[in-house]
Image (tube, rainbow, N blue to C red; front, side, top):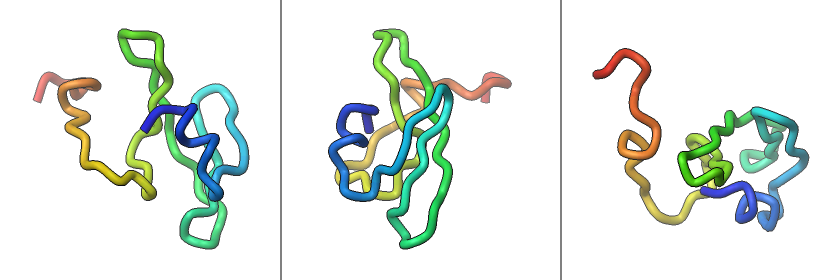
Length: 65
């Protein structure tokens, strides 16, 4: 999910460089963000995502697995 879509969600609390605070599960959780090659900020493992996205293509693992 992109940061812009995240900000429109009712569960969105706050964005700071590198993370988002979310209350999706009725408790405050921190979600990591990543800037893609297209300079768009993505939320990693957003619990409110409607569509399943293959993050391995966007964010390859650090160790080449």
